[in-house]
Length: 257
Ligand code: MF3
Ligand code: CO
Ligand code: CO
Image (cartoon, rainbow, N blue to C red; front, top):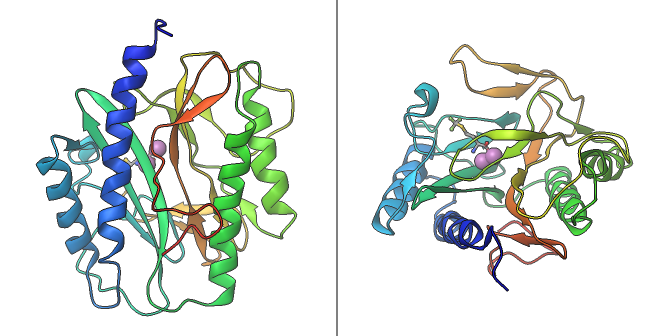
C-alpha cells in the first residue's frame, strides 16, 4: 500500500542496506594485526564504490569516515594506526548516505578469542537492542524503549550510558527526537507511522559515567570498564516497525563474529 512515507522508507532501506553490507564486508578483516585506519579505508572505499558517501567524514570536524570504539571506548573512537590485538572488542559504527538519506548502524566485533566477560557484555547489549525493537509500533512511547533496555541490562549488573543517545535520522544525520536508552514506561512522546530513528544502546560493564578525551570525540568509561554498543536504523509503519539496517549475516543469537 502506498502512503506518504513509502518513498522515504524506500530510500532509508537503500542507505541502511549499504551501511549494513559495509559491516558484513569488513567483519572478515577484523583480526589481530589490522589497524583501525585500515578498517576505515576499506569501509570508505566500499561505500564510495557502491554509490554512497560516509556521513561522518567532515561531519562537525570529524576526520575519518566511521567510528571505531575499542574496549573501554564507549563511542566516537577515531580510527588510527592502533593495531588490533587478540582479545580486543571493537565497535564499528558506519553511516552511509545514499540518495540523500542516511543508514546508521554499528556492531561489536571480537578480535580473536575474547574473555567470557566481554562476550557476555556484548550479548546482553545486542539482546537489549532487539528487545527494544520488538516492542515498536504506533502508540508506544519513547520511555518504553528506554525502560526495555535499562531494565534488561541493569538486571545483569550492567549500566546504561546517559550522555549519548539514539536520534531521529532521515535526510538529516541527527535530528529530533532523542532516543534515550533509559527511562520510565508510559512517558515521552508516542511513536507514529513514518518516524525514522536509531536505537543504539551503549552498555558498560561498570558504572555509566563517561568522559570525552582531549581529541574532542573519543568517549571512554570513567572507571575504564568495558563498553559495548549495537545500533540499528528503524522506521515505524502502520503495524509495527521495519529495520533498515538488518543483515542476514547476523544471527539473532550470536551477534558478533
Ligand atoms: N554514527 C554515530 C551515531 O550513531 C555518529 C558519529 S558522528 C561522528 O550517531 F562524527 F563521530 F562520526
Ligand atoms: Co546513530
Ligand atoms: Co552510528
